[in-house]
Image (cartoon, rainbow, N blue to C red; front, side):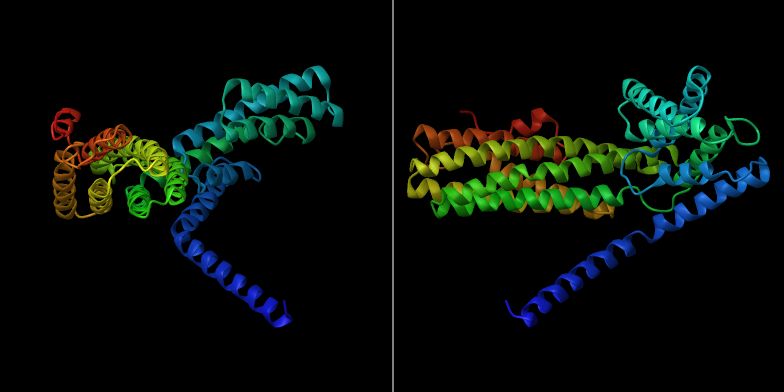
Length: 375
């Protein structure tokens, strides 16, 4: 590699990282402003109104409670406040027995961490409890007593909750973006299966399986953003009107989860069917066309669930439901000209996948399953 080529690679990497960093910073402007106002406000309140000297825990607890995590904020507020208070209590108790010093601090921290893990699995709770126990042993008691820091932590948490309740940002935004991305990936998995089938490419079918498995990360992210959005809609008067839509979206996500699981099983079975040449040319063409129709319907479903306008949402949901229902009525081995057992197994695996997707459009299970022809 020449120096010029090496420099080109470095510059390309820097440009890419700069674009990603700039986009990430742009998307974080509102949360950063909220965290700044919240932290400074909590610090000022604890110092001016409560008369605490240097109430750093008011500022830090508010930042931890807000943060950039998608975990529910109410849980984080409770973890900070309870962990801080309990940590001080444990630290004071152990200080009575062991006194102060480095080895005492090590013993206190070790016991505190184990106690925190025994009480709760939250990482913030463990960090707060251990940190407060350690500070009680190592630092002098602040003016007003050791539990002044607990009050500061509670003040910071309350400020974080107040910001969350008055949050101007629509809590539906992240779940809608996530669900559209997830359904776009599922659509890609199904289309890749159709391409693998028509090309008799078992390796490509295996790639579709890997792609379907990789959807789990997106699904976990979507689940987290759904929990956070529902919490905001519950405690915020501004966004309480969105609770019904978020409940419907959560139910759709549960059905999408099942559809993704079924897509993994189908992709795995498709690999075997291709290797054993289990389908005739007519069966390959019919099944490939069916997979492409499902893939197109999944994209429409993604547009429906991510739409902000209610009329657009209803229109796309109706189209997705009609398209999936049309596919479901033809999911019979005879209709698809499939005769061998392994090919019939593929059809049997597609049937529950389509039912799951129909349920994601809002249909009850019985109505969705009623579209399937009797075997």
